[in-house]
Image (cartoon, rainbow, N blue to C red; front, side, top):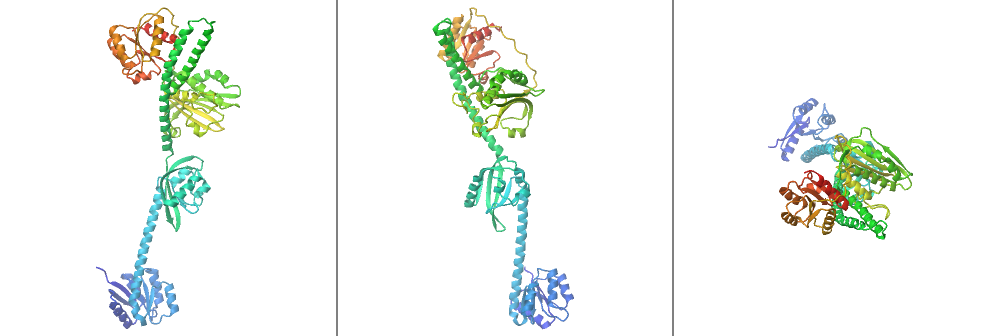
Length: 640
């Protein structure tokens, strides 16, 4: 239930007071009117009781209305103050309103009293509502400011018409590297925060059309010049009558780099499978070419006219075999002999050779770290990595320059891996090969490890050098990172996992197998007819008895007819039944059986087929007849 309106009436004439009561009552206002005649009574009423409206005569014997107005405005500024007087002139009325009176009513026009009171109350309500709204707005602005500054995403507010920065939060300052004083009042154009000015133009055009944008990706530049890829959301807002842009970004640089790395890894894996498959098929062909050219050249004396031609065929086959080995190295399917090695020893041993290879115009500088850790890798492959990178550097410095080879121990943590993607945290030995040559375009860096990709002139490179380096590093469990700038040179960093295992002593060289007449029964299983026929002829010429089969099922049938053989020679990958599966079934029947696998792949292919390599040996294609005979003699000479 609403309380009656409480009115304090400052009036010395009782009749005028009663007229006011009657007038307000007739108007329908539910009110209680209290009269005060003196200053003391006026102040007491204000202090002790809630008052909604003050009515005051202008002239009183001991106290005047203007003094009452000053008291009311000083102590209770929200209470409406209405002069009700019969002597108020126009100038006095204006002065009273200027000093804070709400309204004035002449006693001769009492019909205006109730409307004046109602109007004053409405104004009070409006002021209260406005004050409440303003307080709510200020609270909202405080909350927005707090949320703006505390937001973990970079945020900025700029004027739309000129781009002037009105505010930025702490995360924005941290990411861009500026101070607040440097930013406020400047603009993106002045600070060059957008890496591509056209991107900002396109962004503003879209924002002008749609009023808001979400999840657009742009590149931004910090004060130091470093670039970041950020996902942008923005909307147009109004601040102090100005159209402004509230822009929020999310740094997705690392995410984009990881995505690029994943795509690159998937591409390299796909290319690797293709390269490995091509090399495997070529190895079958090259095995046949090398084998039969060897047989053929044995039929002629060195002075025979055909001898030189056949020897050229053999040499060409050897060069082709070297190319397929590079493809296999890239696809990580090359046979390797990992050892515990010291990179310093390998680099130092190659100094003279490298100096001859790169020529006198290039200054070779070698910096080897003291107390360098050891790594497990194939020493021959590491030499190939160093040589390939040195040759690559030489070709990038046709007018001379500096080639630097360095080794060092390095601890890689998660912060380092964020800048050198593809490297896992751990302890490494790092081999760095850098040059001061021509450098490479950024677009070329995405392709340099792909087989047959080259930036050299036609005929001056196979495009396999860096692909081989990549494959060897990957097969050694390491990682490779490259940085290059046009006209400033290129740097390759190779990370090989460090090991605490001791260095291995060099293995003694086995004496060459004597070419005496051999004996023994060999079960030969090879699905490629030309390779099967070549191997069979090679073994038969040496004196072995050969039982040949085109696949695993046929081999089991041949074995059933002659259940005692000395050696199984089998391809690894064959249709229906692969070589490891065939070996497992035959070893179950004859545990002492010795096995030699021949394949265009490495020992990993056997592990992938579930067969341990302890009791088996692999001869990688392409091989010569002498390679085959030496390996067979070596296996058969071993005691079971």
